[in-house]
Length: 183
Image (tube, rainbow, N blue to C red):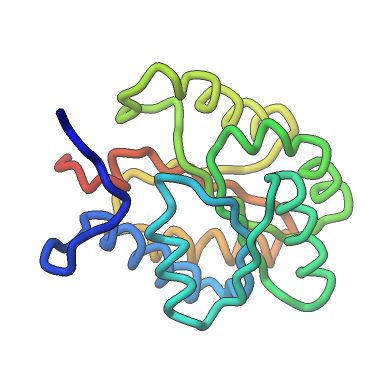
């Protein structure tokens, strides 16, 4: 019997720390100063890293569409927000994402799961379809991360885009990056 625990031992470094470090560094480089999040198994270490770094205001939420609305309000209050969620939440958020586009509210949505390689479980099938589907359907630009080493630069460029074009941008993270699988 295999027992899995969400607790890491202090002596075993987490492979997720590499992704978390890259995301936090990239977000800070692109000027993100507020992050609304809904807990997600692929992003748990990243959320914790943001919280312990203490340089980004962290706001938990109960629903993804609520999170995007909160992030939009944070922008209107002078912040540069990001949202962290599983891609299935993008499906719940079509209307509020359309509102963000219509009123030109800069917003970065970072979501786990993609339709690309590295999705090992069929039960994420709908999650994968809806993330990219909503982004494409309402015209939100997005990228799929392929290399942890380039994430800080990618996030910096995304920051330039959301500020310069007053737009929403999605960054999708395949789980194999979160797990630290060799490429």
